[in-house]
Length: 122
Image (cartoon, rainbow, N blue to C red; front, side):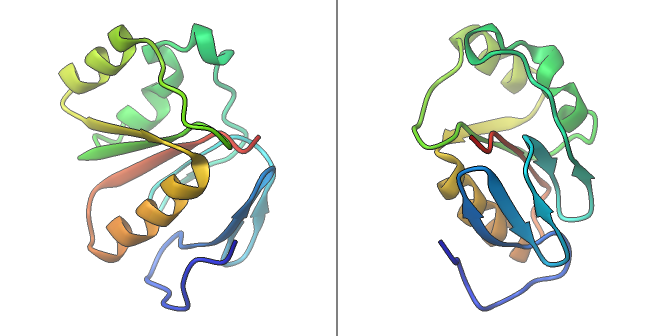
């Protein structure tokens, strides 16, 4: 699915397909953490039901205003305790399907917001 023809500076997501995130100059095939100016490719979170704050430390270390968690083709919510812990760290979190997280990420980086996206590509 192609998202938009406007291309803000930074790690703009051109398109997403299950298993592929297309950026300007590269295609990522692994779970990934992104900001406008950072790519943490090959992010290896725990199995979904075992996710913990440690899985999100690479993103939270950059103190984003908001963390978008793309959960793959279906919206799935991790444990409430994990969401609470992320919010207590001072970061808002939004959980959505990965395609929606990619679209939202593009909008927020175009607005120069301090956003990170943790994207499951499966």
